[in-house]
Image (cartoon, rainbow, N blue to C red; front, side, top):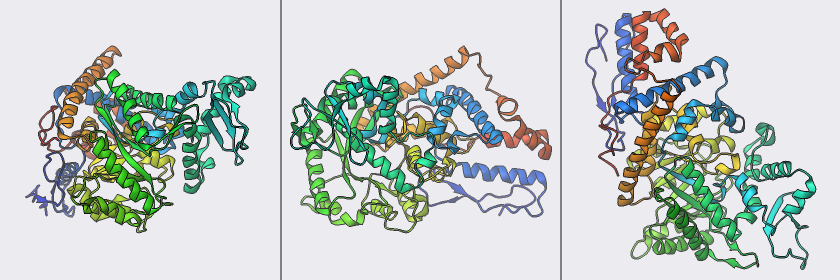
Length: 587
């Protein structure tokens, strides 16, 4: 314990948390006792504890260069201003539903900086919900062979026909979409109607989706609605290309797509099997890579649905192994997808999931399981997390319930199993309302390997990865978390990707070049706006960002004491990675 007459001896205990990325173990100390202390001693002890706590947080290993510190000053001025406004007005975008927050986010200075930033890779993105639905409407439904109809339950359906079916009796009355659009008398409003039918976006999400069952029913129906468009071969090839283009335009350099292989069809009704469909994915990707040589690549994770019979999953696993052997640099592994609360748990498929390692010789099939995407605790649903770590998953999708499982948290850290954070998805699908309460905050505070992902952005009107990065940065990290956190998350998306060692080193090289350009762009843009700050003394942190809070500290601690605490709040503790180059421990 720290003595009352001074700081005394701080005994550092190496805790059982092994840092990723070559980081040092986190030091701890016995909590100081405030009894009998004078004010100065208490403040010094408080500073020690705060610095010790900082060493846990993701990004605390990063040392920013001089240029990065200048960009950080611009970023943090914007962040602190937005947080202050949120405290003052109680209007804070991450605290409200994304459908209402989106226009606020798009005005954010922090968001505009994040948009410019090279983000590395998106490692959890479903291929059939990756491309802006507005693009789908403009580029798919204006085809003269595109038909639409409403089923008996009122669900909108699409399909391409040379001639619509007449015998046997069609399931509904197919009409050419262009004809319906013309008859509506207002093409813009007609397309807005299509958009509302093909996404979850509504004006009042709380009323439209009162509970998780309602929101998941709507969410799952969207795959069927858009499927008739996306599974048409010409649309499909362009859909994948444009989805990658959206990532590229958002400064994302790499993607791993969750792919549930479904038959693609031609205008004459011919359909293609899984092998052809997988090859079509690669052809679409290769066309994009040819046009964008600085994009690092794409891999896919073969997916089954978790309401499938065990025999079907066993067959899917065998096919995934075959495809991975045929396309070793394209097929990354295997996953089970769909609503965890309503589907079979991993243990239901345990014989099938163990099968690859029981083959002679054993076969490598990396797992990237959706696990813990639930609010429940101690049920068969969140126990998927236990099975995921026991099955040596490479990453865990969502991991929302991980913070309720100490052993799982320990294994995520020790086995370097990254959690794929999907904050907007978790909010839209009603796991959490206020993203300040998202468990990502706990994961990041404990340096659990984490990567920022976007899940199914097209269905909630998002695109790219910047929206989710914004939510994590503003809602799931402390006020003082800064550019180092963003940099760490971008680098970790490469570290925890399915790229091989050579691919990762190339990715770090490309990313570092883009990072340098990003720093220059932010600095030059700020100068052009007349906001060139003298950041050497950081006076803006006191006088420009949140003066009222600084003044309150001054009332209790005096001007000098307030400045010490204020700057202490904005400083990170000791760091072990030396500069803005590739970390020595990577990959």
